[in-house]
Length: 417
Ligand code: NIG
Ligand code: FE
Image (cartoon, rainbow, N blue to C red; front, side):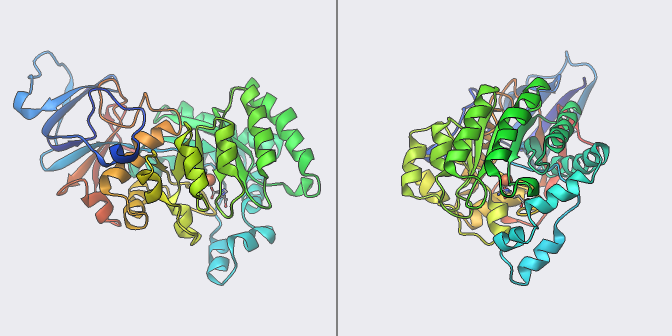
């Protein structure tokens, strides 16, 4: 593998001798940087870095590729801890239906929503699904994402859920960026079980989970804890069953109403509870005593015009919070993490430093990738963004529609797809 040297970097952002696991409360406001820096990558990892003032020389490096980063910033890639990028087709028509007055819930009740995506997916071959999903993976890498979590949940029967997870496994096997797989069989109640919810839960527990364990298809298990979807009790039942099969929990919690998803996530030691539009003060207090990462998905709240989760209050209460894209066809058809940073600043009143930490260090923790990615530190994966010539990192969320990345480095090499 080629060695790569980035030199004359205007600002090397998020640099740590000892990388933090998460950043909480006031710590989220800090972003350590080195001005006029160099950074070396070897065997796909960050090998060393420092100030150009004490640049050690490169005499013992053979086959070295050098990139002059004058005027440019170098950042760790974004860590997107919540996506549904394996899906078939799109739901553009539902977007128009909502513009014309229907709510997300009304669209779902008419057979649209998640069930619409399930219908599409079941009519799509595994190879076609893989190709469509691969294009989305390429899209988000170009937009600066250097690690990602991907969920199933548009299959909703044994074979289709396994198909989705096998596609995620194939995306993992490309060895582009780290991919974590989440089993989200409990995303909605499929038509076949319309009048027999416990029957579907039994199918998840007794048939899907053992098959998933056998093929080692998932890292996490997730549930959509919501009115008309799965109750807190059902969520608990499913997460505890997942635990027996080695899967760590995640929860879609308090998105459209308050249904105790956060409380359940914490009781089940989930690694994250996501969405949080209806998170209240009692939930914030629960988070402060837990290791569960509150994760905000600003794309979905924006796209569905939902109330905003209390992000500022969470940080001011001393919490760590993560932001992720929720890239999916129904509620957030974008995986652009730079845009998520802009929303974090503009709508949620995070500072650029807080927003950057929320989409890197804290979101890496939310998918158990805190050792591999999240910041600039020796031994971390060399998944990096080289910006165009810009004034400072605050310009990234500020110029919310501009393309500001010059090069993406993945595994220590320039990304060319
Ligand atoms: O995270 N909230 C549940 N699931 C997805 C949306 C799924 C869909 O509409 O296809 C979400 O927003
Ligand atoms: Fe989601």
